Amino acid sequence: MGKPTGFIEYKRQNKKELDVAIRIKNFNDFHIPFDLDTQRIQASRCMNCGVPFCQSAMKVNNKNVGCPLSNLIPEWNHLIYLGLYEEAYKRLEKTAPFPEFTGNVCPALCEACCSCSINDEAVGVRANELFLIEEAFKNGWIKPNKNIKRNGKKVAVIGSGPAGLSCAKKLNNEGFSVTVYEKSDRFGGLLMYGIPNMKLEKDVIERRIKLLKEEGIIFIKNTKIGTDLSMDKLLSGNDEVVFACGTSLPRPLTCTGCDAKGILYAVDFLKETTKNLLEAKDFTYNLKDKNVVIIGGGDTANDCCGTSVRMEAKSVLELEITKEPPLENTLPWPNYPNKKKTDYGVFECNTIYGKDIRRYSTTIDEVIKDLDGNIKSLIIKKVNFEAGKFVDIPNTKEEVPCDCLIIAMGFLGTKDEDLSSYNLKSNRNRVILDNFRYNDKISVCGDMKNGQSLVVVAINDGIECANQIIKKYEVK
Ligand SMILES: Cc1cc2nc3c(=O)[nH]c(=O)nc-3n(C[C@H](O)[C@H](O)[C@H](O)COP(=O)(O)OP(=O)(O)OC[C@H]3O[C@@H](n4cnc5c(N)ncnc54)[C@H](O)[C@@H]3O)c2cc1C
Ligand code: SF4
Ligand code: SF4
Image 1 (cartoon, rainbow, N blue to C red):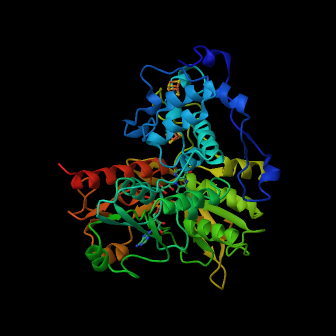
Image 2: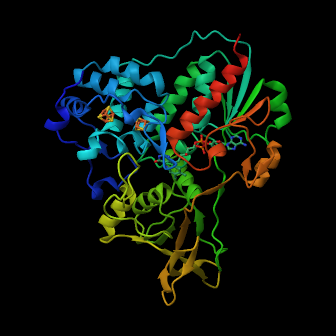
């Protein structure tokens, strides 16, 4: 199976990207797909390992290693190499409900533990996955399943993020009548209103929602459960209720002056910007010619960098409280690599502003306001992590200009007011659960259960949650 020596003959190629100066002029996807020959050659690098770690769905040192969906990676890599694309897609769809989401935004946990990466570079699995799903849509291989035999059971899924969607899809396929409730004006959760358009174009989400509707799932938007529709009503009208509401409580900034005007939470900023773009309106939060500071160093902060530079911010500075990661990976295969990464948004800022915009071991000491209460500047300081906490390094305070501060410091769980409107018992903003189950009628999945995680983890969680419900109603 496979081209036995592909991994020796061919080097990994990454998809080409538009030049930074060109791509920051808009919010479109900037990757250039491979031609068919290159795609096949890249797939031929797969060694079809006897024990394919890429699809292993394991945890090593408490970190996800291998595809959480256990995607049948060596099989579809081989079929791509043979040019049997439809067959390859059929293998992909067995385990992956939304490859167009993961093919665009997954950090490719599979590639981090690919055997090829021990001595060389990993197989480009994610690019192969995206290629297959786009071929499938283009060639009409995806048809809505309209002949599902209904089992008479009704399920309400609250939240239309990746967890809610995968749970709804699985239950619908098994014959449950599913209604998805979404408080926002568009479906998709953070796929729609978190991850920016240049990383995941929004018509990709709408294309999938249309298919799910055609398969019989009912979608209701602008309806917040607990406020617009009570839990009592929902429980009395359904056999099962699934919460997939994500993490609604961002970690706040607590230093002096943190009530200044001009401080935004990252998801509010990213959501509003995507909404403005989709509705062709002026930006609500326009950062043109502003000195922007982003606190936090993860995916969300990176997306804020990419968004700020597209809005033509005057300067962008990213503050990260943890130490600068090593330049070379310090962890052996198959661990997820521990090294400094420069994702697209930071790379774009570094290119445009001519220097690395990141400051490590740095946090905010004080927000300085003008007489009207608007943010004017920040006093920042260096810190060390000692004996389990961050300690100030003396004489490192410095004032930096700041017209807009964006907080991207992660999430703490579900807001207290939301939890009480759902009548759910919780501990430190997390619902108290036995696996996925809260009681005999209510389940919880995705980020609401696990805390902030990844799209692929949320999708897998939705499927596993659905499996438990399916098992409960199985005819013995
Ligand atoms: C800016 C940003 C960038 C990210 N980038 C990546 C990335 O590149 N790759 C990656 O793998 N992961 C990324 N993530 C993480 C990923 O998006 C999440 O882990 C994932 O979306 C969680 O899925 P979920 O379905 O559990 O929740 P969400 O996607 O948060 O969806 C929850 C949904 O529930 C709705 N809801 C909440 N309460 C109610 C209610 N009472 N009634 C009705 N509806 C309700 C919300 O409006 C929302 O639509 C990113 C996260 C952020 C914030
Ligand atoms: S979902 Fe992510 S981990 Fe799984 S095969 Fe795709 S890119 Fe790899
Ligand atoms: S680990 Fe890498 S080389 Fe081995 S089967 Fe998976 S993708 Fe192919």
